[in-house]
Length: 242
Ligand SMILES: NC(=O)c1ccc[n+]([C@@H]2O[C@H](COP(=O)([O-])OP(=O)(O)OC[C@H]3O[C@@H](n4cnc5c(N)ncnc54)[C@H](OP(=O)(O)O)[C@@H]3O)[C@@H](O)[C@H]2O)c1
Image (cartoon, rainbow, N blue to C red):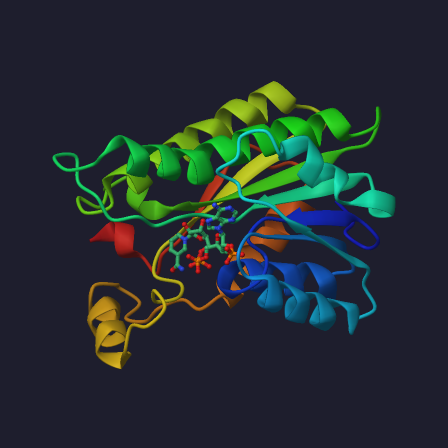
């Protein structure tokens, strides 16, 4: 897909990984629909940075735990429609175990990490005009293959996101391609210090955390490569090899 002038929706685009994807798309020539939930100030600041590159940006605030907002979020593109790129980056990394998880935690994890990408993808595909192609990239986690015991519902939801990526690639072909990036240690959780980073790096064959640049590069690659669908690219510094 040629990205110049294409409208792209990024969920959770205000900061961190989502922001990096927003800025990479802006640099590639996309106009942006920047979704946020709580981080309104960061969303406005990111939008200003993308506008400074000459891009149009529309902001859409929505809680993805609400299952009925997908059409509204896509419609937030307004005059930028049709949205031809959807990046499902928003997520929640809740702590729980199989032994201790309660229904509210499970529901929140499933709602944001899995249900929202499913119904946003549905709304996105339904809103594409006939004959116009689209591309979706889901932001997953390599640990679906070796689930975190202390992030049980998160791991199961992201595993569902991987399955959804493949199912949607089949269901939406040939008009819409659906791929995913499966992230490893890209950014440390907010508030963690350098000792945490050092510890994290020791567990990774490449001995470092990735930063957001590899994610942006992979997302652009998946969007531009017209013969890839149903692929899940690991960006984990080789962590899965250990
Ligand atoms: N960081 C990593 O190293 C890493 C590793 C593996 C996978 N990932 C995945 O990469 C993605 C981005 O990671 P990150 O570390 O940048 O995330 P993060 O800092 O935890 O931020 C979470 C993002 O999701 C949005 N979000 C959370 N709950 C939401 C809700 N109920 N409704 C709408 N939006 C909601 C937040 O929006 P607001 O701030 O506006 O509320 C925020 O933009 C996630 O899917 C995560 O699972 C990240």
